[in-house]
Length: 370
Image (tube, rainbow, N blue to C red; front, top):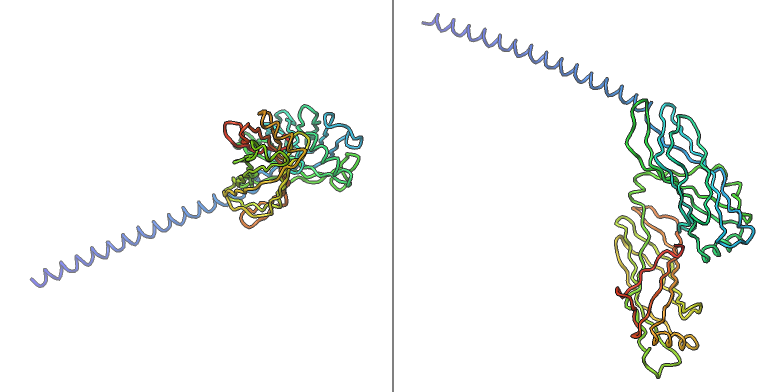
């Protein structure tokens, strides 16, 4: 009996030892396979990383070659204004071509769009090549008005007028037979001209800044200005024939979810015809992200302007033009922008009751250059 138990015990031990040997072999094989697999992944990753470094597409580079406004030194009228632009687009890639789906250029003066126009038809740019972009903006593509042209001429007297060129182009990169997805590219180029309307030497061959996609997503929009609660309370009072009061509310809206706005003093001027009937200045202030600000204000109108305005109101033919001007700075995260000039205007139709006569009972101020 004892011998039988001893044999059974030894048999169990042999089975246990054999199982441990099999488990040990399986573990070793598994570890070896895992190590080989990880090494393969590492090698493939290194190969792809090297390929990515060698084939990584670089964005095109834009340089200002020439920029001129031929009529600036001749005091010509804005109806005859022309702007000539000469820019080079450089493909810096050694093995990657670039498809330009389209190319549109815009000219800005103090952040007001003076005009936009297609610059080039679709084209393909070979690696390590340069393309000349030459275009003339004429009266058909420029939207500058007489007041904006006067500001440009006034700055010309100081010796320098600064403009901004914005070039937008959807592009695709091409490597051999592979083509990338579409990318929207923006190039911003500041340029200054002298009194003769020609580009200043310091600005020639200046490299343009390509705007990153992140900035495009966070690029702040301009604030909105709206005149509401407008009234001329004493228009029907014959005892106030020598002067009157105009009351209004200015709504200021910051549409940006990621940017606050710093406002310099806001100047409002109200015109009846060519005559200034009143003005107000709103002191500088800061407006938070996606916030609104309301300003209640009024101004007195004295004769002889009041008599003419009151007569027009009673005849339901009165209209005031309001001009708004200020400078703003945007704060996105912790970054403050440079100052941007804003010029807005609107036309206020006035009914016999002395209030805004349109259906919405409010007037949104729009870009004065448009």
